[in-house]
Image 1 (cartoon, rainbow, N blue to C red):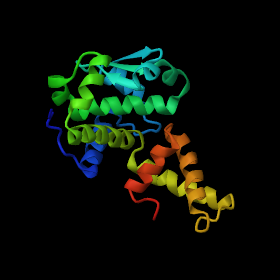
Image 2: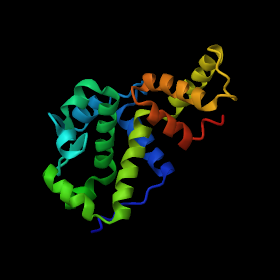
Image 3: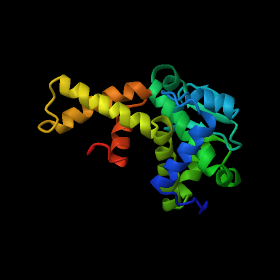
Length: 201
């Protein structure tokens, strides 16, 4: 099955995310208020579901009509970084793939479990990667990230880290520190720093 997913590059996605933030969060503050954007800018209802991840192996699920995001209750209540990323990821599908998914998306979670495996592998990977990349770009805008990285380098240096001799430890220290500013996981920061080639600056 093919859903004709557009092949957007990382730079294409960056442009989409920058334009999105300019329109929907012109204040430019961080952390980006993703929950408010989902609910009030897009009118999407957030539906907590106990055991969603346990029963279906997913943290969140976008309804076929794009009016609801179901999210695992435990994630919503106790894993704020993961919850925020789930919101941004599902919103990414609305922004990037809304027209495509409306035409083919099943209406229930069990139907999704049947639907996803029969997608062409390339389409499935593009859908997934684009939504993940868009979410990271949305929650961690480029300029605030670069500033936070410079601040983290100074803090690591002041804390006595040998940035050259213990690069992996220093990177983890800095990513963890930066993640708190954006209310995302350290993994999201590490991936952004790699994709944006900021580590080498």
